[in-house]
Structure formats: structure tokens, C-alpha cells
Length: 224
Image 1: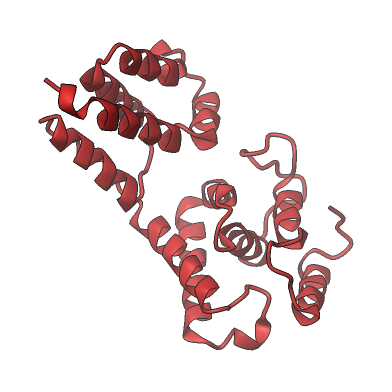
Image 2: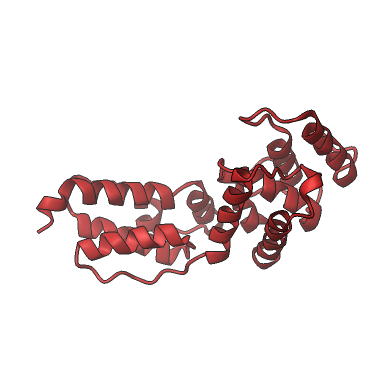
């Protein structure tokens, strides 16, 4: 039935599984302490179905994991899932969409392309800068610190730097609170590492100095 789509369907489902069942998913199932083999071995089960050309079963397994783990998808992933389902003549499930999270990623990309750095404080009065701060604060308040800091896995467009700065400045994390994504490092240390690390593009002396001053103001006497 799916022979003519075999290669592309298999590849699309495999890529979706890799995108959705990532470190956040692993951390989530550890927290819930589930004993369901269908969830714990979910990625392996999907791989086995794909290997045996059971594409519909692989897709259904991925749907099951998303539903049971209450994984929030961004608009792009939701669209990809619907697209694959329609190609296989399966009625797609309407998963919860994390629209605000997607909007935050979009704003990070927008300010990056407009050369607005989180620590370029001369641009704090720009509408784009204010917008990303306000949206970040909104998501932080709605989700809580741990969920908000899932943005730390995003390496592009300084998403993790924006999230780290907003968390420390407006979330006021406890000194010894451990970041769930890490399991060992505190929230403050993890955020500071993201903020103070070298970036791909060389930063101006002014921005580097701003980072240091901001750190002294918001986390005095704290070492990474």
C-alpha cells in the first residue's frame, strides 16, 4: 500500500521520532517514573516497525507516546505529523500545540537577524527587544522555570541565552535548585554557562562588559 512512498515515509517518521523523542522526552519519562514498555522502549519499537516496513504502526506508536507523555508540539512538528498521516490515509490526532513557545523561537530568530543581542542594552527600548522580554516573562510565568528552561536545548539564534537571561532576571531561581535537564547543575550555573560561554560570532567589548556587569548585579558573588 505504501510501497511507492516507502523511502520518504520511512525517513520522515524516523526524523520526526528523533525530533520529538529527544532529551526532554527522556527527562519527562524519568520524572513520571512510568513503567510502560511502549513508552520506555518507544524509539526502539518505532525503529523496528520501520525496519519491517510497518509504517502505520510506527506512526501510531509515535502518536501513542506523544499522547501518553503529554508532549507539547510546536506548529512545525504538528504540521509534519499531519502531513505524514494524510499521506498514509490516517486521520491525524490533534495534538496540543505550543504556540507561544513557537512564537518565542520566531522572535529570537527575528532579533538575531536584526543584530539585536540580549546584552546590547542600548537596544532595550526597541520594540523587538521589549517584545521578546515580555513574551519570555509570560511563558516563564505560565510554564514555570523548569519547563521554560527547555529552551536551553535550542542552540540557534541565541535562544538559550535569551532564556537564561530572562530566567535569572525575572524568574529569581533558588541558589541550590537543580536544573531538570541537567540533573546535576543548578539552574543558576546552567544559565550562567549559557550566558558567559563564547559565541560563534565575535562579540564586541561593550557586550562582553555588559554581560559581566549584568552578572554582578543579578547573581553577585556567584561563580560558575
